[in-house]
Image 1 (cartoon, each protein chain N blue to C red):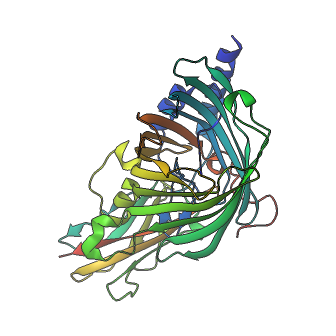
Image 2: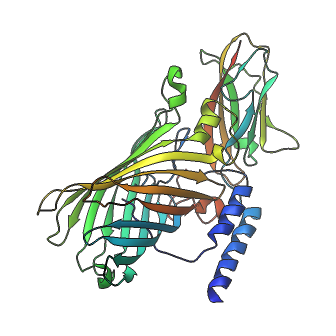
Image 3: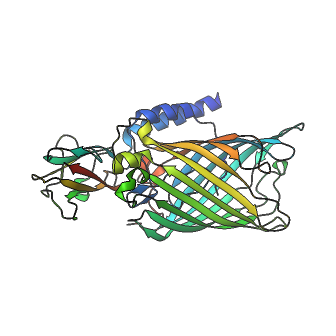
Length: 301
Length: 120
């Protein structure tokens, strides 16, 4: 499951201005006629070349209440057809109430994903599998990291509703993606069920596949969505389920996606305040098609 | 000073790449409009894409409600605008028609889609 990513000083304002002025396009993540955008709180079911840089979030939770600013990155590369490896990292700044702040890297996470163990283009549906490995000892002790690792095998799925009957045509731009994973720590930490869902309504799909209702830029390139992200401890007195509901919007430009969501805790165990996250996803295969968008070994075609 | 230099370099790189790079081709707008109802049989279907296409690998056809192809099988790119894909149509009776397209952009990215229009 995606979390916040590491920080790098980039000219985000320049990106935004340049991108909004360019012609509109999207990249990767296709099943049949459906483009599935990369989502923020939950990972998508595609094994493609991606660069997420940066992702910046703020959330206040825990006891004592701790304001966490998280800046992160993620890079994924297709190695064999439909199989990608990735690495992600987060730089955390923690400020507990009444205590001094601390900063440092979270544990780095390696990922592997195999796309399309099952797929139906006609029904815009896909199932993929993968795993995450949070590498213990790679993060800073000052931000609470230790030597324990966590391995999380995960199922990813996606379903677009373009196959709905004509009587429900305005529901056809809806799509869902989701993940279901099991945290297997190497320490005495509890096993957790990690589960999440993204429900999105694609205005580009509406305009190009259902009905041109006259939307203009930037709205015709926006995908409003709401994501649900939960962690359910299963043993070792792990406590109750925690999670967030993240309403937001994605903007699809020619070479990047810009996303923003609110982070709303579902219960007091998660937190008491609303946070926020913004994220820039760079479409590597559109910017450098000769370098990205195809596997290192073998061919997708 | 170092941070400002890095930011400026990244911004310049991004702007330069935008002028030279390509991307996936998506339907920008069409005639007849996507999901529209019209009163007269159109002379053809036109689709404007967001990128120039490779004509040899791109397809465009129109089917009737029974799934039969009804266009004149002359799908081609406009001579002056390589992002405009057209196919001619004979006189069509009232009914609902499906436009099915497969696009390959000049940098070989593939996209596809379909939409309906209705002749009253």
